Length: 188
Image 1 (tube, rainbow, N blue to C red):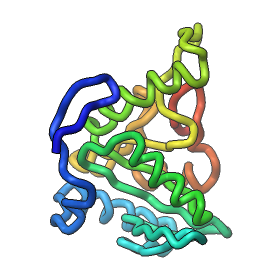
Image 2: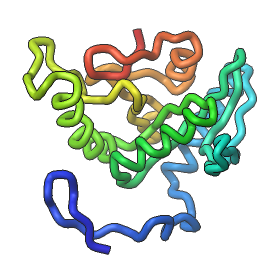
Image 3: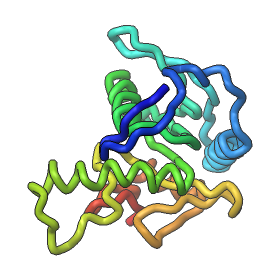
């Protein structure tokens, strides 16, 4: 179907949920396998394609779901384009379920997402005036997104030049050192 981007550019997209039954990509499978193996290495049991729902009955299925020290955490892997409103909608659905959600995307998906989040962040948080300290990658504080490179033994890239292994990234989520600072999600 024909759609128009937030910048007014027309493009074609699949109808909603049209690809819901499409097979997972190699990147998606490799990403889930890497995250689940890293969790096992940390002594945490994780589940793939784990279902859940909000109190209002909105259903969801997490790519990877695990619990640790009273926290329930979902890791979503998004290879293909997804509109910012869909990232936001899915993030809010997890929040309404009492689940923290962190996103891993491909570099191309990250670049496309930042084209939407950067201007939104600048307008919403800085009144359309470029701050002296800049806006980092232009990520949103309510949407923790990092890039997963499945070709480099599962490195997670974030915060511009910073990267970590998947176990180190997950450990950062668990110990609170993976945080939003100056427009980017990164490890302390």
